[in-house]
Amino acid sequence: MVKKMTSPNDRETLSSDVVEVRLQKLDQMRRLGVNPYPTHFHRTATNAEVAQRFAHLAADTGSDEKVVVAGRVFASRNNSMFIDLHDATGKLQIFSHEKVTETESLAVLPLIEVGDIIGVEGTVRRTARGEITVDARVLHVLCKTIRPIPDTYHGIADVELRYRRRYLDIMVEPESRTRFRQRSAILAGVRSFMQQEGFLEVETPMLQPIYGGATAQPFVTHHNTLDMNLYLRIAPELYLKRLLISGLSDKVFEVNRNFRNEGVSTRHNPEFTMMEAYWAYADYVDVMGLIERLFSGLAISLYGTPEVRYGERTISFAPPFRRLPMHEGVRDATGIDFLAIRSDAEARAAAAAKGFTVDPTATWGEVLAHIFEEKVESTLIQPTHVTHFPKDISPFAKEVDGEPRLVERFESYCNAWEICNAFSELNDPVEQRRRMTEQFEQEVARGEIDRQLDEDFLEAMDYGMPPAGGLGIGIDRMIMLLTNAPSIRDVILFPTLRPRTSE
Image (cartoon, rainbow, N blue to C red; front, side, top):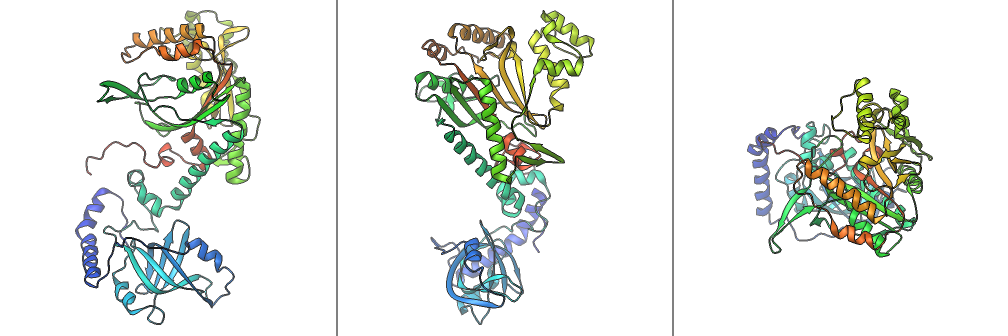
């Protein structure tokens, strides 16, 4: 059995002995006239297709039909008489013996080790124990490996090593393999759903001369030919709104990679995936229904039910989700009625009286949002739309009729996480300029010297954007919820990690 790999030091130890043995076997193959890295190999079936095609075979019977399969050796028994060959579709047993296998292949058989990639030509039978098996007539070495793969029984004990060597994690951990296939299915499901709802998929710039659409620190790069700084996008919002203005479609969406130069956690990665969409002649209530149909549909497509397990909890995405105005959630949790408070100072005083520590310059809306995050957010386990956000922190949303301090914005929460952000989008160009200018001045005052007012976007708004509902969904968090993943690193193939000094 291959030694269990748990750390970089283990790999260094293996390099001094096991790797040397493998290099010697590589030389032996070449002396036998075997090319261990041929240019091509054409198989006729995957392992799963073989299992399906010959499922009718009774125990201890066979077929004369020839198959050609290929994959990685995951186990060998009885001096390699029996090999477990894995491909992307599953496992297949290979049998090699002088009664069925050519002499040249038998000569190379002792040089084939766990981890090597081989091709097999042979016929299929079902053993007396009921296992579909290929009797190998010819063995082809397709890739002789230099390093041993991890022990497939114990897997990789070091969780961080699984993130750093994702290819090994996927190779030997069925749970990871399944999760990333589910990720692909979920992304395909998101696109299919949006297209069925009439949305046009578009692509907007990842390199932007002015970053905007969200409040976050950007990554900065430099274009040599143009001699100008560019920013990796933190959000595609302002470009998608330009397309709504253009009339290209009344419904546009983008599955996009965003980059934010901020901290990492179990729910944050500097590079992440979002889906943003804008829907003309709709409002935030329409968007709520869209989100509910999307989440429930994805859960049903994966599990046949809108209910999913996350840790010890059962979460139901069956519509409709609960709707909770932010100020009502805070009132129920603390007794503070923010709608009865008329000034910023009064809001700060009310918070202090209840034991909350807030910034001495915090506005009414900022205090409300702070208390919500402290007292309410952690209680939102089942899917909930938190509505009526303060205008102070929502510069792109329309005001709530009769309460100008609040806007038609909601965030969807599940498992105490924010999973979606949506608005009835502001389309008054004068008010948009006023709010963006105010936000810009506040950011500059906080020392964000790279901030610029996006005059091109504001000019586009002058040409008229239809009333619209907009939304952004964190795809990685969505996938965490739908696949029972404890960390965002478990659903991102190659997450951002701090370098290991020992490597």
